[in-house]
Length: 277
Image (cartoon, rainbow, N blue to C red; front, side, top):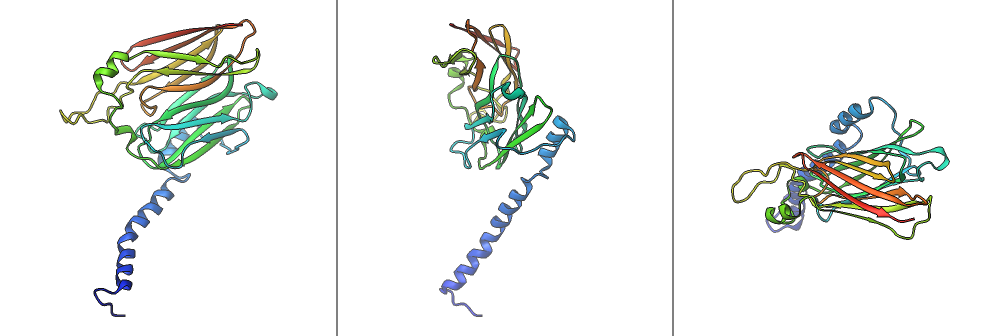
């Protein structure tokens, strides 16, 4: 078939040919993100060896946007299908993996007796299109997972939201908040906010052309009424100014909620909040 220079059929065929490599790359990208993704398989082997992992949305659900508005601040919500201890079942450990981040293991959370629910909300950086996975180890030994494919890129090398001087001025400031209308013995929603740049070390200073130093929150420990609530080991995959929403188990006599935070520079921050009966 012969096409004239202005023939629309010719333009259509050329368009398909030009688009083909991009389509092929997109299809390959999707295939790489399936269960045979080598990055995920490496993390799975290191964390769980060959233990089976089930996907059961009635036990664990991960909520995440299909396409992120800002790859440096992607909201995530992990929901357990039960309160801690309900029916004799609880979450011992929760692991958050972002398959294609430079450091895929974003958070590992150990739950203590003061935890009301294993639900957790935070904000993360995502560097490439790929799966975000939440894996929970239950008290009966089972592993359950919920995953979402998130379209986001460049989050780990995105510039900070405020300048370095402003970040230094507020570094380490923390705020604890707890809902006020909770009944004793029931799970209570609370949140922790930490002012910290959480520098990934992957951001280039446009003036000096040098990369900023990596410095980020590494450990978060929460206790309530003298009992451990949760202990989280995290990295720079957690967004600037780390934010956690969590649940504690209300005590009839109240108690003190204590947050302790350590960063990679050896700095220690602490905040306390007294909760009434």
